[in-house]
Length: 381
Image (tube, rainbow, N blue to C red):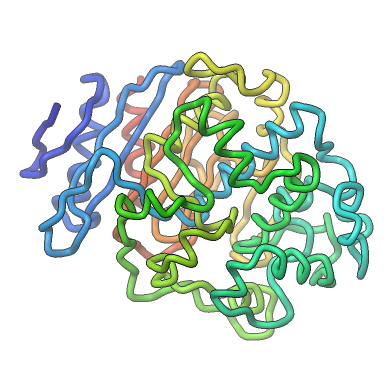
């Protein structure tokens, strides 16, 4: 079906109860805040919004399609967290155990006491690397994990959080590889995305390349930070450019903090089990205990990289002031450079995702996601 709002045609389906949210989505395109995008929402495990609109190009000649996928940058982290939660639920990982229990080579240079929850929560002191890396190096799993295993933390692990923008996925992914014998992309595909019928990839097969939309970079790029500070060093290495996401080497690689490819529908299908006690779409993915564990506060404070106060559950940011996407306390979120976002609310039993091609300034989503989430709760009332 299709509907028109403010001269914008929105394709897909939605419950009329949430028509104002879909109108808000369309208004972003009408006002030029978006070029092409998708939005999805589940409530009580049921899909109530699955829409897309706009175009793949600035000229407006190629419409966004139902099966369009795109790089979602750090919204990928929510999928990496989910992979770790599934592995933990199966008894393969203990979040309170040292990383070196699973990855012995890691336990050197001051990292002997780094715990698995530290890497889940940006608290390992490994937010960047001591030397710059090229795009091909960034896409080399063995090289990146070896460098991280040899790296000395930039602050005492567990003492503070500092956004591990690019490194977190390699850390989580290598632990998963050690305990499952599979890359995180393969584990996701076989154990999670496949059963949930979620069209999401960490490491895209060549056959899917024709469906990938290019991101449209924001003029400002990544945030500037003072050289030599933890923030400056973090954004200096690894230092991806938005244009890197257009390359085949990036799309094929597994960079589990930043290069997941999917759309709003696929992200919502993946995260709905967390909103609904571990089960959704006929799949028992997690125990209720593990699903609830993501809302238990692990660390809170001024982030050493982002310079903002953040509160983390297990991996996910918790919806707390000043970053409050939900009126409920048992809600968590994360977003991606340029604007994509994921919201999970266990009180309301909802999962929402927004994915777009027009990048706006900001590393963790932006005002578009805030507008949409606020409207969702107004429609839900």
